[in-house]
Amino acid sequence: PTSESPLSKVKSAKPTAAAPMGVRALSARATREKILKAATQVFAKHGYQGGSVEKISRAANSVDRMIYYYFGSKEGLFTEVIEGIYRRMNEAEARLSLHVDDPVIALKQVIDFVLGYYRANPEFITLLNTENLLLGRHIAKSPRVAQYSSPAVGVIADILDRGRAQHIFRSDLQARQVYLLIVSTGYFLMSNRYTLSAFLGERVDTADNARAWKDFVTDALLRTVLGPSVGTRGINTPM
Image (cartoon, rainbow, N blue to C red; front, side, top):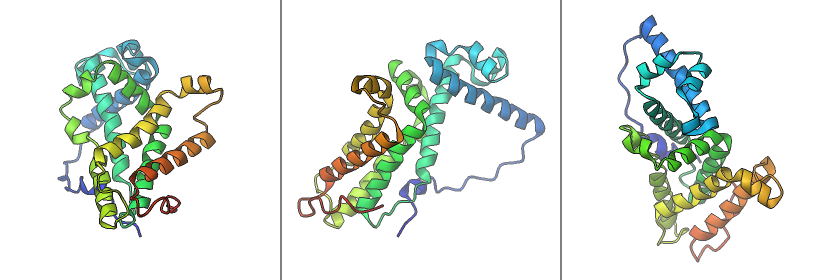
């Protein structure tokens, strides 16, 4: 049976009804969103240094002054781009419906989501690489970073607690370490897919190779978390 994901419960507070927006406000919001969308594409393609205000305004079919009007600076715009990619992953996580009564299946679902999201959204990886090259200075200044921080560690902690209660998972596991293991396996492959493909002599990001990698990661992670009394019996539990 499926159950509402704990991820969605993090955002259970109902927003207050907003007043209808006027024509000018709707137009301003549309312009702002168009600039953000263009900036995401330009920064992902050209990096922070190469993603000039001129390229972004041209891609948005806008003018430079509108970028400064809405975002204050190129740095302010890039900060909102980074916030946006975190927010969209956060929203995708919130739509997960986990089999919380079966911790093995639930953990498989988390792995499937993370690796699948990275593969389907390569700009997420590219932009995070750019921000890490900049020592994380934009996300560190973001007033919204706590709002968009992923609740995935808490979800994994809940899954591990359920697994321990059912005597399926080891008792010494830390949710943070399991989370880091999952995201690192997905992030590394996508971040280094071009160099790895050249080094190994074949594309590592084809559908077949991505599926084989996900299966291997799932197998390796379950072998790590399953308790000694369970062994490898639960690894082949279908989702």
